[in-house]
Image (cartoon, rainbow, N blue to C red; front, top):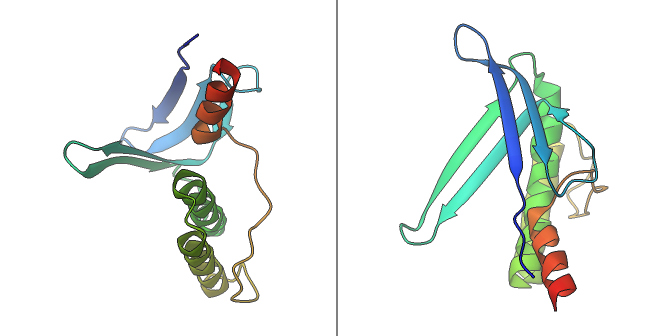
Length: 137
């Protein structure tokens, strides 16, 4: 049985079109109602054109320290997603290693080993799709 999942984004902008508040909600989320976030990256792959469309937003009061943490965790999340999608452990480890080097450069990681950081709470659409396929099988 198929179903539709829905994700809504609400972006408040100031007079200069700079985001002042970002809120999201998802029909498949365990969180009831809207959730505030300070920054977001949405990447959409067009397989026909072989190109990516990206929406990268952050609230104007987001600190550089918060952006450093955000990118550090996003790099590691991309490595995890890449591993689930391709089963290619060596490339996933390479991405994690880059994440640790990035973290060291911005003062978040003390060593260069590719260790996975603690997973944050969020909505992982690939895992959601895999779970749905398993339930439907």
